[in-house]
Image (tube, rainbow, N blue to C red):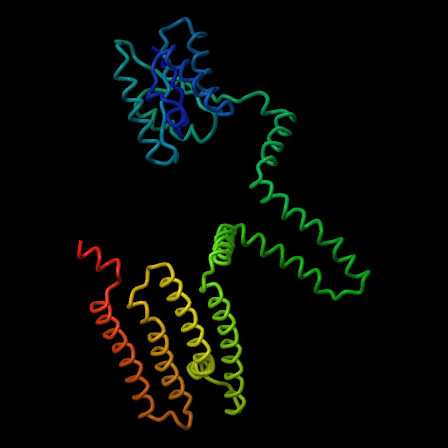
Length: 367
């Protein structure tokens, strides 16, 4: 007995139709092929199913049965295991005393990777790969390119970088004619690099979320939007100040600074600005939470924590830089002050949260 075995390794039939697999029998396979063609006319597994029916009808010199076995969507080891289980089911359903041999029908090399699994269960007489004729000529290539380029996402991924690449040469010529600096070419290349990097890291989704959040903040009056801009400006100023402090101390020392002193100088120059940025950003968030009715007393810990951390960092960095005022007592005072400030604020606002709960919470407890 010959078993015509149609293989659908990625389970298009099971995912796109309501058919349970394996599908056994000439009529059932034809019905499954029609349903799959209706759900997705471009699926190559449609041709695999119809080829199985065609071979079933063409072979008349022996008993023939046709069946469709499927794997899983990922097409990995689990898919091979599922195909093996379904082949066992098909073989168990064949009520025949004859030796069963298989003729495997696939649509490509990926599905043929499961052949060793099938061979371990039933002898294989041959493998038939179904290739659609139109896929071999120029018309199919033109249709494929047309389908790919009609997709907006694919079009943006392929055509935009290609267009920028083609513009580099004329932009360089135009810059030369206008007497612009040679960095124009580098600017264009940099823009192309940023675009490709953003596409590769899916940054467009992050940018869309940031734009949407900014737009919402503008129209709903969120204080966080303003405080975030101010905090960002303070961070930039702090970074520049930190670098300038490193250069000043290096010049004063008259030589190279070690890694420890370099980090200490950077922190010493930037910590005040960074602390101001953290306090402003946290105050904006607290204000928005209060306006939205989600305020908690514990939220007020944030600016105090920022100040406490800044005091500790400033004391440690000044001590390592051997500044005139930064002796051992100063370091001890900075560490103790930062710790006490953080602990004190935590206790105070914890007590306040217990003594003065929000109105909604008190009403819910009373109810």
